[in-house]
Image (cartoon, rainbow, N blue to C red; front, top):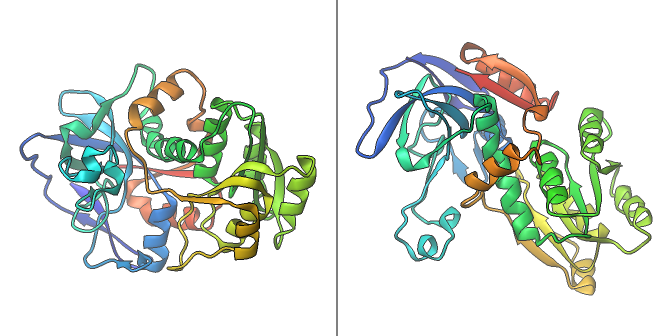
Length: 332
């Protein structure tokens, strides 16, 4: 079978390898769709995320769907938690210290024609779903977890700072949760992202050296946002989110920064009594993601702008790294 391995920064190579053999409680899946995520781009551009670095040629990919040997079209949950530690037993498998994750560490991901993965991590897709829909359920799951952590309630004012795929999915989930006023930001050069945010009902603002926070405050009558979600992985977005949220509000950090440190203006955060919350992947969200998509509350394929075959994984990563579209899909 063919697979793509990342050997180092911007060093993707196509390999011919043996088809994996499923172990106990595993199934063999023919991979049909793999979405490129912001975290994939950190590995591609920088060779790692923070202190985690590539230590061997690894097959990337964790937004994935495919077809089992018996013909089932399934979405594939990328995280394998131990299910025995105190955090797993308390309902926080995403924080499991022994977690394994597709495309990281010793676990090859889905950018290959076949993969063997635990049967319990496979979620059959309803009639009418495509493999690309299935791959989009992983970022949707992250958005659901983000909105859970944001404590969004009906009638709230919610802002998303960074209108990439995760930010756009957060807008849709926040709307489904009852948010009454949505705002979104991104760089003026990424007009297509701001256009997409408007299509989901958000008032949009170009990110310009923090001035967007003042514009957002004016748009909500000076009251501030109830919740500000940072989904850009940029310090400027963190700063703008803290400035735009109301006293007593929540700032949810969903973006993955390149630096090892994220900071905030202490006087602003202290004066407002803000709550900062960090997002770590997701938990127990695939059934909810499938239900939201089935009910038409979230438009998954509207975010897919580019598709590439496996042999063109390199150009796919380059397009995604330039932020030319929204979601890039590789189809092995």
